[in-house]
Length: 202
Length: 377
Image (tube, rainbow over all chains, first blue to last red; front, side, top):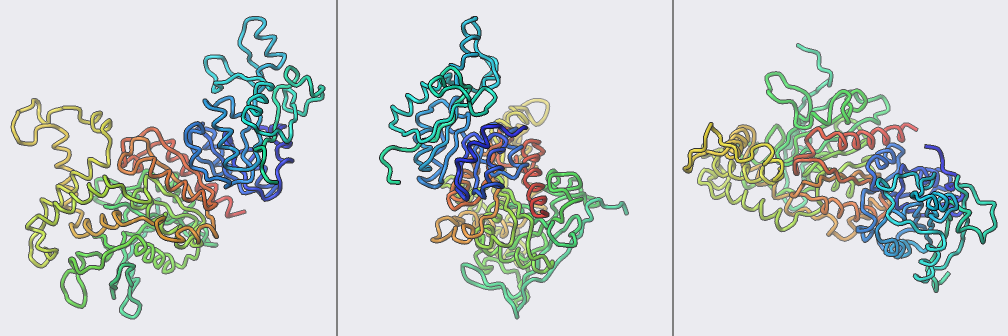
C-alpha cells in the first residue's frame, strides 16, 4: 500500500514520543510511521482481519475489536492522541465513539470522507450513489454506514461541545486543498481535524 | 532409521537436587526434580531463535513429529514443524512436560527417593509460578539467556502469561492462546466435579493407589469425559455425531447407544493409558487458584519491560471465552504492553487451538516471524 498523503500531515501534528491509539488502523501504515519517525508508543485497533494480519506483519500491535461496543477496554487518559482516520463513517454511533476518543486522550485527530464533495454531488445529481477514491465502494457493499458532509461533521463537533483546534481540507487525492477554506464542503474530498474537549485545562 | 526433519531430541534433566531444592510458592520443597523435554530444530549461534512451548492440562513434552510406533503425531503438530507456524527450520523449539505431570517430569505419582514410595497427596500444592520456576531452570540448563517467545494454549497460555508477568526480560514476546487470567465460577465447578469423581473412587486409596495397587479408573474416566465436553462446542459435537446410533440402529436401554457416548468412552479409555489421577488433581487445581492480576503490583515488571504480547481466542470457546482473553488484553494494554489480539470465528470450542485453522496459524506465524526479524535488526 502506498503511503497516504494525509498521513504525513497527521504525523506532523503529533508530538514525538506521544502515546498514540489509532482506531481503525488498517494495515498499520500510519502507526509504523509514527513509531519510526516520532518514536511514538503505538497501539492499533482494527476489525478487518486481513488488515489486522498485515499490521501484525508490519510489527504493529493491533487489537481486534468492535469500536462501537468495546472501547471501554481503554482507560481514561491512557493515551496522548487518539486517531480516527476515515473510520467514523463506518461506525454505527459516531458521537459515542468521539466521546470515547476524548475520554481516552486529550487530543483527537479525525478525518472523514466528505459526502458533499462536488463529484459526489454530480454522481448523485445523475441519480447514482457516489463512487470515488474516498468512497470506492458500491452502495450495497460498503463498510461505510454514514454519509455525512464536512459541515455535518462540524455540526456534530459543535453539538458535542468539542473545539476544533486544527482543520485542514484535503483534495480528493488527499493532498492539502488549494481551494479557499470556505468552499471546503464542496471542494474537499475529506477534511482533517484536530479536536479536543472545551473547558479543559491546558 | 528414517531421518527426522524436526531434529527431535528427547532428554531427561535433573534440575533440582538436595543441595539446590525446588521451593514451592505455597510451601514445601522437593530435593529431586527431573524434567522430560523435547527440542526441535537447531539453536542458532547467537542463541536468539529459541521458542519455549508450555503445554496444556493433559499435554506432554512430545509436542510435534511422529514417534516410531505412535498412531498420532505430537499434540501441537499443526503448529510446530518444518514450514509450520513455529517453523523448526528457523526456530529452536523447547517443550517440557510440566512439573506435577506424569509423562517423564516429577509429579505426585513419582517415587519420593527419600521414602521409596510415591508422593501421593504429600506432593506440595502447585502454583503457576512453580511451573515458571522449573521452566526457567530448564532454559538456563540449555544455556539460553533470552527466549524469542514463550507460547502456550489453555493452561499453557496461563503459564506464558505468568512468566511474562514475573520475568518479562526472559523473553522477546509472549503468545497466550485460548487462555484466561482467572477461572470463572463455572470453570471451577467443572474442575471440582472432576476431582470429586477421582477422590470418591475407592481405588483412589487416599492418594496412595500406587502402593495399594488400586487405581481410580472410574473417577479419572468420568473427569475426562466431562472435561472433554467442555473442550468442544455444541455445534462441533452435533456436526460430528448428531443423534447417530453407535451401531446400525438405536437399541433403547442404558448401554452405550449413541455415537457420542461411544466417543466419550473411547476418550476416557485412551486417557487412562496415558494420564495419572494425582497429576490430574494437582494440575487442575493450579488453574482454580490462578489469578495473577489480583496480586498487588502484578504488572510492575512487565510495565517496566513491555514485551509484545499476542493474545488469541476462539468465538466457539465457552471454557475460556473471548471475554476472558479480552480481560488479559485489557490488563496488559493498560500498563503499556503492545498487545495484539484476535478472535478467531471458526473453531470447535476450546480445543480449536490444537487444530489447523489457517487464519489462526497464519497469525501466529506472522507474529513470531516479525519478532524474529525485528530482533535480528
